[in-house]
Length: 342
Image (tube, rainbow, N blue to C red; front, side):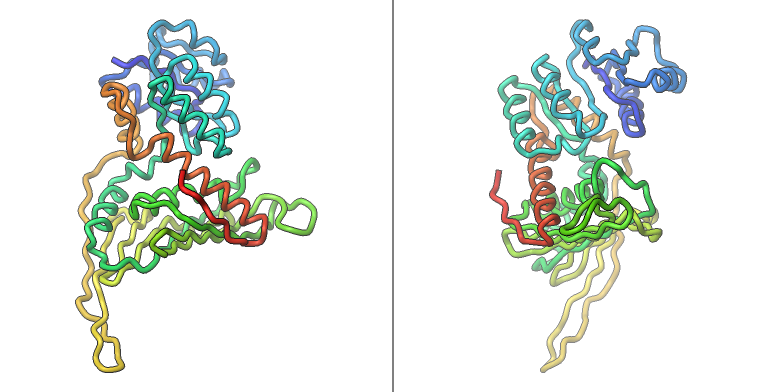
């Protein structure tokens, strides 16, 4: 049994708590949140045993004997100090994404986890979605032929964040999926954006961008284009990779067929290109709750003393590095930013 504490029980932290309470190899020892009313609510919601410590003070965890791990679901601005303190206290850490807001801080935490021989995992939940894991198999098996390009749309009408822009709020999901499916990270990124709601001054892009267009260029010259907006009532959660033999589409809004493979290619006849071999295949998925898979992978990584490959601290660091480069490009009017591998 792994003794764990959940830190932060806002919208996402409640789901982490639910999954850890249901895990057969986990003993939830404490719940931490600065809002006492939230602690009261979850105690009633989950009928928590009186032996579980409910506290507003993170430091109170140091008094719990044999505490092995913490799950952190607090605002991203708090992650660095909380994670660093947890690792120094020799706790394994599962952190809500993003790992931090600074690539250098991310690297420092990854090195500290390795030095302490502890698991540092980031909750990139989409990487555990059955459609994403099945999609990776399709792409890397070569079923799309020669890869051409990719595109994604992540739009909705709110919520509008006041701490980060649409880029930091939304892009990390699609970037993580593209990286996972391609087995690569971008070498060049670009971003442009528009601010309507929360403007600051004039000149270059100021305020928090409501609309962001992202271009990712990978080592094989594959390019992915991402449309992000929290000011669009046309809610979309759609990502596709296009190849010479067809297109693979992950449409989260389609509950009946979230992952489809549209077969089709061209046959040349003289100067004409004729579409052939066209068909639609619904990719079968193994139903599971992605967050449940995240929590279980974290626990199994601790028990096996084996860092998770799919969503390790280093994977989280790569994504933060990409977002930081995109932010630089965004503030410089779309200037291409070249990345070096970590």
